[in-house]
Image (cartoon, rainbow, N blue to C red; front, top):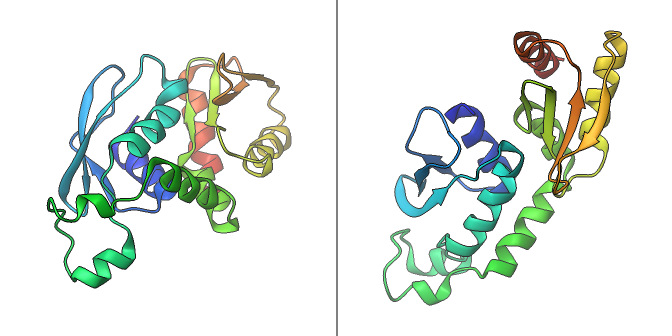
Length: 181
């Protein structure tokens, strides 16, 4: 996955200004994740792209040091020192923040730009927390273009697959066209 798409996706999901250290996100590699240009944690990508977003969310919730806003405001600086570490959000509160982000109208519109990816089989979308709003847009798009497809979930049901059975270049072109609609 391209760096820009991945960063936009994780910024959208977490609501934080996160960035990674590579131009392309490959599977089974490690990447440093930065929050506001400061190192925060190391992200190890999974073996399958289907698990990329869920793996990031789990590692973010387990490893990220996100200081609660009220303490940032109180201390008037963002550097995370030893004194402030005990004011970090818990895994539970980070996960709740993510779930809340998934349910906003603005999120669905933006998620259609970054949550889909093209593959050999067609197009996939990360659906761990999603309602059907975003993938029904893809269904309508493919139906309006008279492109036959079959829906199936990945093994762990983190991804909904639109199996199109054309070539990868056509899948990529369709996805780019969908993002502009």
